[in-house]
Amino acid sequence: MSQMNSVNYPVAVIMQRTLLHDRWNTEAWEAYGVVNDIFSPGAEPQAMLEDARRRQVVYPGFVLTLHRDEAEGYFLNVSSPEPRVFVQWREDEGEVKPAFVTVSYNEAARWMDSNERVDGVAMPPEIFAWTGAFVEQHYRPQPKKMRRRS
Image (cartoon, rainbow, N blue to C red):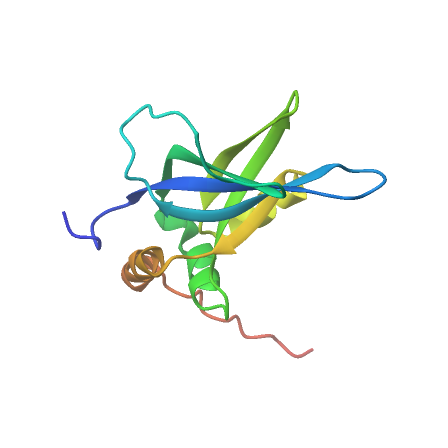
């Protein structure tokens, strides 16, 4: 199946915990990156790096899905100076987990408007090419409306 016809892209999300020397917080979590998911289906999260200051955990099993009705959001992202993959993540009883991923600016904005935690990470070149091909095939800018002068 060619990338042009594909609408799904399997990814794994890397989350990073950084220890803080702060009066109010002892650690900070953030989405650190998104990579191709090469893990077996149903694979558990795995620590990739752990030292005195940082811990990185890879969470496999996510899928970027492109929808025609979000084509404008994908266009806005790939035409920006720094294209991003947006990761919505949640903390539940002290455990941090990614929840959803998207490459749509519009979808990420809706998540943020709903007070969800969302981080944008650098878009890998292969996801950029895949998203760009989808945008070329499906995005059609809306014609500008003429304003009437009264």
